[in-house]
Length: 233
Image (tube, rainbow, N blue to C red; front, side):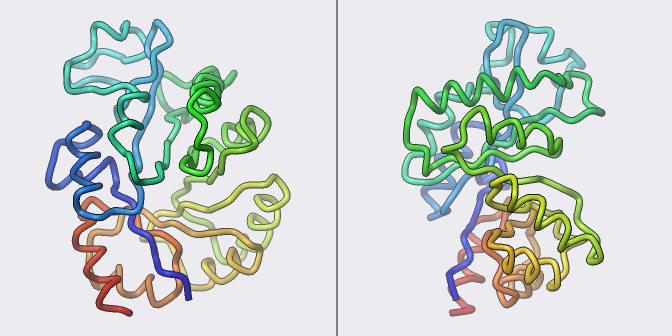
């Protein structure tokens, strides 16, 4: 059985401020296999690393130029540099309920262009809650792995969804741990897809999904996950 990988959710976000260069570097120091981070577009086309569409003061990131953002918010290039030695799950924030939703996938295209310029395609995995966005990425940058980020897939829908995702060339499903079942993991594995679940901070739940053979644990406490996985060997 392959070893479950540890994906630091917004970096080592319990130890450091989330989605910052410090959090990404700390994740590497802890021994994480990967970092998950969130990217949003600014008014002038920059790719800012921030989870919410709005800043703490209520201003929309998509209505601000890069120079107007707080100093702690990094941009994609610097964030990827800070993740040296790890692979990176780049979550494109483009959900229909968000104030900055863009049906034309301008941000996805910008990310694809940036990754093409950087190379190292094996280090990147693109995810999004909006499935058409990751479908678009298969055309924009087919060399880069893609995953559908979801609250979960019902057991009765797993085979259909796994088949659709495999046919599109996607790599993985990223379900919310609360709605993840062992059956879902088994079905997606049989379809040749990986399963990386979020956000798992409870050691008992970590141990359970490791026993199921899950491919990745996305967690705010990568040091805890690494210890759980080591104990399971």
